[in-house]
Every structure is written in structure tokens, then in C-alpha cells.
Amino acid sequence: MKTMPWGCLLAAALAAGVAGAQNYPNKPIRLIAPSSAGGPVDVIARILSPAWSEALGQQIVIDNRAGAAGQIGAEMVAKALPDGYTILLGFSGPLVIVPQINVSTPYDTLKDFAPVALAAAAPYVLLVHPNVAAKSVKELVALAKAQPGKLNFSSGGTGVGIHMAGELFNLTAGVKITHVPYKGAGPGMTALLAGEVDMMFNGLSAALPQVRAGRLRALAVGSEKRSALMPDLPTIAENGYQFNAAGWYGPLAPKNTPRAITTKLRDSLLQALKLPQVKDRLTEIAVEVIGSTPEEFTALMRQELATWGRVVEAAGLKGKQIN
Image (cartoon, rainbow, N blue to C red; front, top):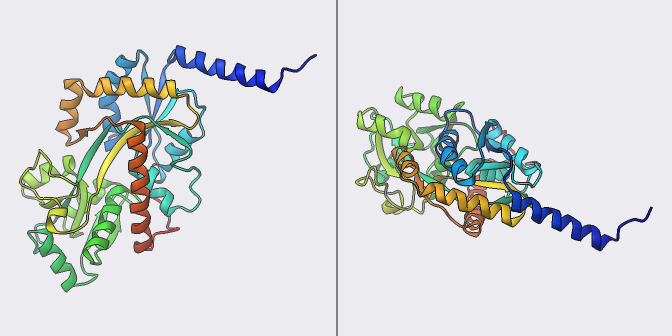
């Protein structure tokens, strides 16, 4: 039996890929949310998926894969078939933070994924317990410098975004506030409310009810601009510190996914993001719609890999166990 020349095999494979992209999608798509149910990633996935499914013409099924600060879910997508039927709702933890801490991360963020679009972003807010004698960022820094090592901050675990925001604050403000990891942002917030810790970075949506009730004090937001939900609250940068940390979320496909497929995913996602019911629900939880190009998403991840690499080195986190 004659074997087909290599050139013919390649042409046949390319033709099959083009045909597959043209028919895409013809079955349900699995959206890996690398977090537990009820967390920010899961909530955003459930807000996006109905409208995105309708725009795409095929059901998007959410599959929660928590563990290792999102690394477990990210690895699943990195090793999945590049056919557009398994995609990741990525965020900073598994994509730009974990690879800096875990020297054996089983994927390369910039090489093993095909970014679709940065869908949304959410500011972190710097919170302190009312017993802390600081009503501004500068007062908190002065207090921390006067009592080095005495203040502490909670987070949802080593390597998560709100932990790294605290380490970035240490680095940029020149202070040493001790990290106390908890098993999730919820327990970390409970500890702050009880006065077990002094401060915490958390998502604005989780913080708002506690701040409005007077149970916590908000000192600043960590994003580059103020939040429309708390327009009187300054940014940390406005206080004179080089600081920009926010949660962000966007889908990625495995590497080598045909561009026609990632383009179809992006176009349908942008269509969903423009719908009032999607924008309104995201705004309610303090999440801002973005809708970037794949290139812009890649540029963000490249920039944040460099930023968090410096923070991890300064905090001595390289090789630490990921929760």
C-alpha cells in the first residue's frame, strides 16, 4: 500500500482543521472555571455563559475544577485537544502568579494557551478592622513602619491574587505586614471581621456590605482608577505608591486552536458582553466589562508575569507550597 507524501498529509490535516472550524461549534463547550462554586470566577462564568451560549449557538457547560490556586483547572485546558470544546476562564492566580511560585508548574502561560479575550476586571479594595488606628493609606504605612512585623493581613491562601496584592503593598510601601493565609477569601474576611487580623485586600463586591455597615473600613482601591461604586474612595496610587492590582478574567483555549475558532469565541463573547442584562449583573458585583483583543490579553499577562515575578522574589515565595 502506498503511503501519502508528507505534503499531502499536511494539506489534508489543514483542510480538516479548516472544515472543523467552519462547522464549529456542533456540540456543547466545556468552560473550565478553576475555582470552587460560589467564588468570583464561578459567579462571573455563570453570568456570562447563558448569553455567550446564545450568541455562539451552542451550550456552554461550566465545569468547576478548584485546587492549587487554579493550577489544576488551567493544566486541564493546557493539555486538552485544541478543538475549541474545552476552554478556560482564566484569572491571575493560575496564569501569572502560580508559575512564579511553583517551579514545576506543568504549563507555560504564554506558550500553552491561545487567549480569546480579556472579558472583565474587578478592583481589589484595601480593608482594615475598625480597631486599626489608620484612616488612610499613609496613616497605615506610618503605623506599619512604627511597629514593624506587628500588623498582619489575611488572604484566601498562598499565591491567590489578594495575597499577592498584600505582598505588592509591602514592596511598594516599604513595610512588613505579615501574611496569614486562610482556606478561601470567605474565611479570611471572617477573620478580619472578628479582629483576628488587621487588614486584607478583597474584591469590592464582597467588601461593600461590610464597609457600608461600618464593620470594616475601606482605605483605598487597588486598581489604576477609582470605582464607580465607591467614587470617593481614592486609589493607592493616588496616595503616592506605585500600585495597580485588580482581579481580571478572560477565556483561553489550548495552544494550536485554529484562529477561526478563537475568533468565533471572541466575537460571540463580545456580543454577550454588550447585552444590558450581562453588563448590569456584572456591575452589581463590581466587575467592569473589558472585551479586549487576544493581543491585548497576551500583553497584560506578559506585563503581570514580570510584576508578580518581582513581588514573589521580594517576598521570598519561590518554591512555597501552593494552597
